[in-house]
Amino acid sequence: MDQELVHTEECQGFTIKLYLCPEYDSPDWDFESEEEKAELLRKIDNCDVLWFCAKVTASKHNIELAYDYLWGCCYDSIEQFITYGTYADMKDSVIAEAKQTLKVLQND
Image 1: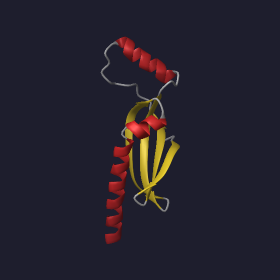
Image 2: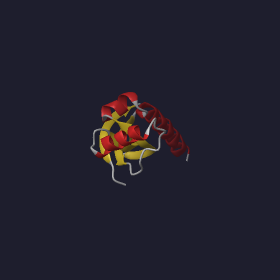
Image 3: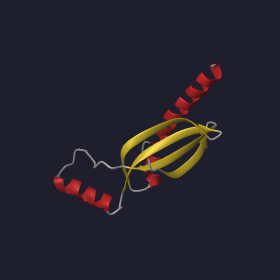
Image 4: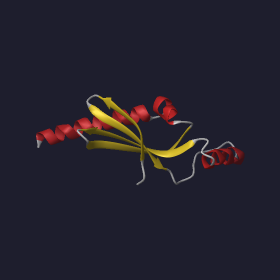
């Protein structure tokens, strides 16, 4: 899968990475009107908004321990997704999963 690394941060001892992956499906949301849907599709086609799949990973020492995907993301910018989108929830999810993975590995 094609992916582009757009954000990296350290959090709770893990390296958190945000990748953008292509989203191939059209939005399947409920629209107020066909005009509203056509306008959004035009913005996506013109790259006026970002239409992507988000992948967030948690790693330690360059070993990926957890990941999460969210399809159908539509934002004006990456910063908007990080600040107001579901990035924080995805980050919390991969950190919790990575901690659990480390516990399992330490008990083996």
